[in-house]
Image (cartoon, rainbow over all chains, first blue to last red; front, side, top):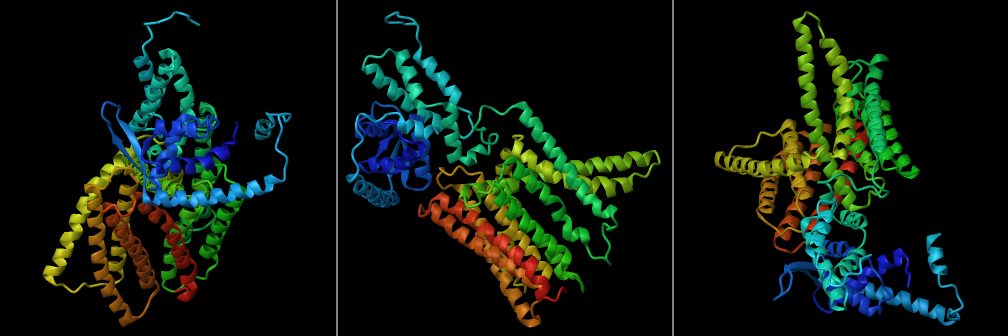
Length: 127
Length: 460
């Protein structure tokens, strides 16, 4: 599915924080997990994950460490800090509020059927 | 497209090495980042190979998914603006910067430099003396007003700032012009000198709003402005040294053949050069001639321990000799300047430091420098407060005292944060944000002195 750039950017932080709350991880595995969770619908430009991780590191939400696990390549592992957990809770509350609100208003609207133009969203975005 | 199966000539390692070499050295991207990206690339290639893709196919897909290196490096640069400082300015969004754009900028810079030089000379040609004790210091009060608008104009043009920002900066300059020229200064000229000293600080920070392209709320942009200010100073001093040599040789050479060039040199070359160099130095910092960023950290490393040593030995001498500090206004100003130097060293060492690095020797040196400066300053302050309670407030003493307190507050909290940082209680980001959020305090205090002191002290 084509998402707007803004939506991808906004949802990336809570998603990465949530994945790291499952345990420490490295970039490639985080992306695989995103892929898995969204069943392949959410497509990021892979490289963009890293500047995001560095930003979270600077803000103190995650900690990074280079490590070489047995029989593997040297990798930078990211771990959620206490601040990161707090930020995740905060983000979660906000997103829950948004999704519940949207759900309430969408309950009354008919679901878009297959007859709708699938490219409408992309065109609207481009305009 | 080749259909050979089991193509042995394909060298994946060479491809990866080449891809790496495209990444390293881009603005904002450092070696460790590329290591991280390479690991990602290899993980992806491994996985694609497992599901049956050939190495070259897997490589192509993985590289494609990684994204355009240009966009990627821009994203890194946004996040690590301190690294950018070592490269050129942000790679422009649109495809490469053309020579024509560079040339146009050069023309604008030279035009503004010449305009600044003319602006400085014009009042004199219209009858304002360079330095006349009777008419007060027109040039003393207006020097920054004659030059800094052009610098602000340069950045307003370069960053293409909006009308609101332009108007805000313009209002500050207009207000400064009123304060400098409408106030009825008289008496001993104390408040006039105070205004003359404080207006440039206000105007410099107002110019900073144009420098950051209007995004003055952003901490990292403010830090860029602090870096810019430091490097601008270094370039300006370098240009000044070169210009001084040039003038000395001009005067000397013409003197040797019996032509007196001194009037020309001192009345034309000096003021025009000093004004034009303000713009040119800013342009040099912008265009990054790639020298200073290597010098600044080195200078900081050399002078931080030396200054700490000086301060500690002064403190020991003060205690051993048990001298009563003989404090007057000059001493207070001297210690203000000392605090400014300490703050400058601190800012340079902060800005030159990779934020990810953990606390080390440099941090302890900075802390010892700040703490010893603070201890000395508290002693001096105690002495001066005694003096003031004895002889009352004067404009100069009050201004110097205020400056001292402004700097003291900054350094005290900076020391606290820095100690916390070495104990992993605060993140490095906090140190930077403290300094950047303190910038308006300088502007407000300087504006207060420039605007409110003359009426408060009867334009003495």
